[in-house]
Length: 111
Length: 498
Image 1: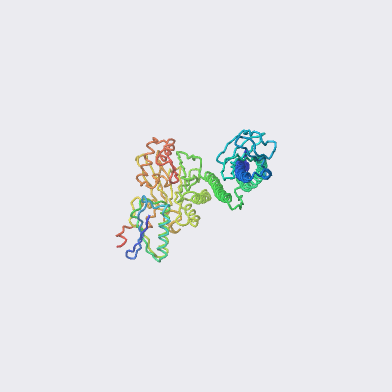
Image 2 (image 1 turned 60 degrees about the horizontal axis):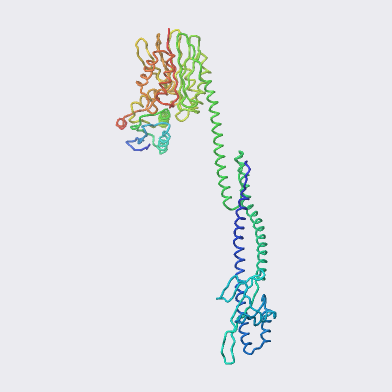
């Protein structure tokens, strides 16, 4: 798994690429969590995670999303998930977290 | 330990001594032969010189016919070491001169010759078992006119008796030396083999100690050679063995603890299917590992009110099991106080939130089945939506609720999102409560909601709507996806039968 970082408007977009089998779960979530924390340490408060290549998540990924969301909300920032697969939306929906986690298409966020 | 028949010490001893004997056996005869050759060669040279001088002296004396001089000459020669006799034999084979006057004028009888060496001018003869070298040289007579004519032959006989005596003496001396070297060799070898064998014996003793199970023992050998290196390697090996053993013991301990944890969890998870009047109940519980984070429980709230709880702690194994047992304690502590499901969920969330760190969370459904109204009233904390089968409509439906998981969102929002939901069960209606293990049956390719409903629909069809068949079919179906479970799986099914 590789993680790219880019700035668009005032958002820092963290894009996950080369994900093995499209899995973002307990096996690799630590890598994403560390990268996210580094971006936060740099003072960024508007962070989006691009899940274009992610097809599967587990409970540890859900835990991370909500953690990230809570962290940025408590420091007057913004968190967003971009390009989320339908299947993942269904999983998030089951926990009713879609109500809290802002999910956007990339162009929606920039507008 | 098996007794060694030929110890290393004996082997070294045997090897070195054989070598020694072999060397001595070859060297000694060679030395003696050489010595004999030198002595005989000296004897020959001496004999040749003596006989030549004797002959020439006699020639000079013959010119003047000095008979006394000749006799003196013979006496002088015979006094030489080892010389037995000296004589001159005339051409007609009669003695002309002899150190023993008895021979004079008598016929010369040639003795038995063992070897004739004309070139070197000597014969080897045997007389009374004595080997004698007979040297000869021609004697010429010079007349007054200066004419030289052959007069006869001068002979000197030299015995080898003393040479052979000397050689025998040498043989005895050699044997003594041989014996001395042999004794020294034995002693030396014993010492040498001790030097080699001692550390090996020590090494053997140490390995016996280590082999006996004392893996902390270290071999201390400072021989400065390969044996010390061997001991060092052995120590390294023992250390690795010790570490591996420790690891194994630790592992066994963990396994033991896991076994205990499993048995505790077995006590927490009900092992009997509860009897609910008018209903058939099915439970299916399979943790992915020894212990898991799935949980379910039945609580007798009132005679006609049955509490049903299902929960899933995110993650697997011991951490999940720990949170799960906390959840169980809270549910059981408050569950029997006729508390309503929303408040019970709030209590659980309040108690557990502080223990759920870094993205850990619990999803759960707490509900009460009212046996009078046949209504299942429940509250969900972000848990998988119950699947309802209507017998009348012959259709499946997911009953979604609003709640979010415990431990993720702040308490105020959590409480705000909690809401009651209810479903009335008619005769032959079914309700399934389950954890997301079913959704993850295909490992990393989660079921969609539609696929999830299809799974239940399919399994019902296979088991011909019979709950007793369902449990077995469920087991077969689940393991048809994979031999090992990827996630804990829990299913509670209830069917109204009248």
